[in-house]
Each structure stands twice: as structure tokens, then as C-alpha cells.
Amino acid sequence: MKRKPPTSTLSLAILGLISQEPLSGYDIRKVFTTTPMGQFSNSPGAIYPALRRMEKSGLIMGNIENRDTLRPRQIYTITDEGRKALKKRLSQPVARDDVVWRMDELMLRFAFMGDVLGKDGSLLFLRELKSRINEYIPYLQRHLEVQRELRSVNGTYALEQGIDKYKATARWANRVISKFQESPALENPSGRKDIDEGGTR
Amino acid sequence: MKRKPPTSTLSLAILGLISQEPLSGYDIRKVFTTTPMGQFSNSPGAIYPALRRMEKSGLIMGNIENRDTLRPRQIYTITDEGRKALKKRLSQPVARDDVVWRMDELMLRFAFMGDVLGKDGSLLFLRELKSRINEYIPYLQRHLEVQRELRSVNGTYALEQGIDKYKATARWANRVISKFQESPALENPSGRKDIDEGGTR
DNA sequence: AATTTCATGTAACCAGTTACATGATTCA
DNA sequence: TGAATCATGTAACTGGTTACATGAAATT
Image 1 (tube, protein in one colour):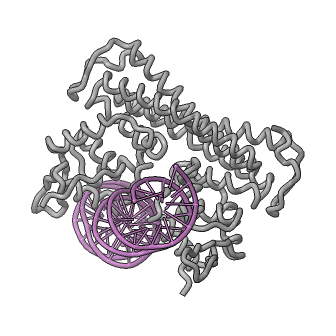
Image 2: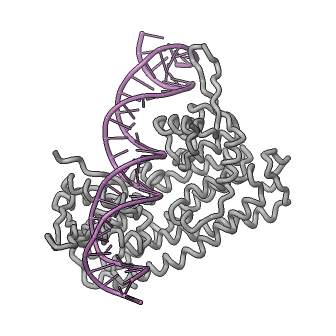
Image 3: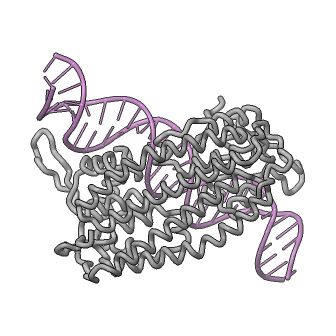
């Protein structure tokens, strides 16, 4: 019986990494412990069980390297089903709830989106993100007034910080949108590397 | 046997709310569903068990209102032990790991800190927060270079967004620090309300 | 009379953390 | 030869989500 695919942020991070190149559990841990991706957990007690869950649901496939030797390695490769699931997950429209509760996951989606959805998909994502943020900010600002009336000084400032962060993200989205529009509109949704896509640096 | 006090963000949010005034589980849910505090979960399946855990560990005490009537309400009040635990949790120094993994909790701490630690405590917290962020940003910027070399366009931008957010928070901290310093340095660590503390608005 | 709100809860499920365990291999 | 690294894993615990259940009271 195939289990249904896990949907945690960690699973997405792992699937995204494996989609770029086959990796072992240890490789994944290394990425998590040595890069800012570590925000999505780095404990073996999370990664190994997640890998097995993902294998059981058919998103990835483990191949034992050095079988029969003293130090076997499970190298996981993404399956066609996994690629389809990844694409589906990256293609989800940006919802208000994502902006409220799952900003980390949104940024993770954006980070892995380039190879899968290309520049066009990324642009669509950024425009949606901007819209959802701009719809959410007024709600927060109304609550700012409520907080002020409650005379909770710290509470008011804390809310202001939340608003600041969303504004910073909206500005970032604008900046990236213009950069994407400036550079030659080469589409690349297939995973192949464009020659010199980064030529504007 | 008393269980040891829960340490989740949700527990802190609940303890902070109850420290301001006695509340029922339903009251707490209402706060979570109608304000931006809802980020810290709003499901009854999280709140009611959390309340019972906190009661078992002695942080709060439930009193049944309308006992014997058809609609009893459990009103929870913070205990002395709970107040002590809250103060201790709010007084923790800001660690690098907090900045990396638990920004939400840090902001929650700041929001509840005013009544418990006063303006001095809040200032100390903000200065620590600023330092930890400024120590962390260079690490992120080094990884920005790595990402650029990997020619992962989206990955690079995603990291930039992370840095932007931290920078926005550092600027916010600076702003609040100056505001706290401008206004008359009335200390208020006792929970009593200063008359017109919000006079600078 | 029907719907919404008040108020509290449970059960099944999922998944993450901490801490520990194992044993080979490489390096100093 | 002892430490660090490679590589994989488990167990106990904690706690959150979804979905469901119950039933009174207030509202329309």
C-alpha cells in the first residue's frame, strides 16, 4: 500500500534538493548543517524518517551504493512521480494563508522554482506574492490601531515589526520582478541550464 | 506527579495572555482567531490540551465558573509559579539560535515583556537582538556568494530576501530603541500601569 | 424553526526534537 | 592510538492538525 506523499516543509526541501541531483541522507544533512537551509531542521531523526516516507509514497527511489561492502550508502533519486509532485507543489497559487502562516515555505518554493517553472513561473509567483501581501497589510494595520488603544506599547511595536517584514518582502518582490524583466526573457522550464543566464551580474 | 512545564511557542503565547487577565479556553481561541496572534495556532485541538498541560505543571489554575449549571466555564488564572516561569522565559538572553530558528518566539517575548520586565528589560532585549542579527548577517552574505557561484538565480534571490528581513528587523529594533530612550525613562517592571506611558503618540 | 454562537473536548494522524547507538574509516 | 568524520539509524517524547462530537443558548 502506497502511503500518500508527505507535505511538510522539510519534505519539500528534501525533494527540491534531490531533484537537482541524487543525494544520500548524509549529503542532505550536510547541506542542512552547512547552509542557511538548516532552518528546515537538520536532525537525523527528522531527515531519515522523512526519506523513508517519501520513498514509500513513490516520490524518490533509494539505490544502495557499495552493496555488500562495509559501508553502504543509500543514494536517493527523484522519480517521475516525484518530479510531477514537486512541480505541482511549486505551481500552487499563493494563498493568503501561505502569507500568514507559511512564508518560509513560500521562499523555499521560490528557491527551487527556477529550474522547474522557469522565469515566467517565477514572475507569476512573485506577482501573486506581492498581491497577497498587499491585501494582508491593511488587516495588520487595523490591528495596530487596536493595539494602540489597548496601550500595549510593546505589543504595538511587535506588530509594527511584523508589518515591516511584510513590506520588506513586497519591496524585494518588486526588485526581483524588475530584474527578471530586464534580463533577456529566456524561458527555461525544463531543467536544462541556459548558457550564461546569470549574465547580468 | 507534576509534569515539567511545556516550552512550545503556543504555551508561551497562552501564558502571556493569561498573565494579563484570567481567561477561558474559549476566550483564548477568540483572541487567536480574531487577531494576528493567530499565527501561533488557533485550533481547539492544540489549545485545550496545552491548557491542561500547563495546569498539570502548575503554571496556571483552572476555576470552574457556573459550577453545576448547564454551561460551566473553565477560567484559567496564572499562578505565582507561572509568573515566575514567564519572567524567566522572557528574561532569557537572545541567542544566535533564537535569531536563526525562533524569530516568532522572540517577537512574542517582546510583545509580553513590557509589563514583566519594564522598559529597561525591553531595551536590553532589543540591544541583544540587534547584536545577534548583526552577527548573523555576514554569515548569510557569505552564502550569498556561494549561491551566486552555483548560478542558482532563484536561490540567490531567496537568500537576499532572508537578509532583507533581518535587516528590516535590525532597523526596527533601532527605531524602537530610540523611541524608548526619548520618552521619560519610567521603569515599570511590576505590572502596574504607568499613567500615560503612551504619551508620545 | 433554523442558524449561529458559546464552550469544551476527543481521536487519529503526522511529524519534529533530543539523545543515544553503532561501527567503519581517515587523519593527526 | 585517539579523535574526527562518514553514514545510518532508533526510541521516547512532545505537541500540532484535521475532523468530528456534543449540546445549550442566543439570534434571526
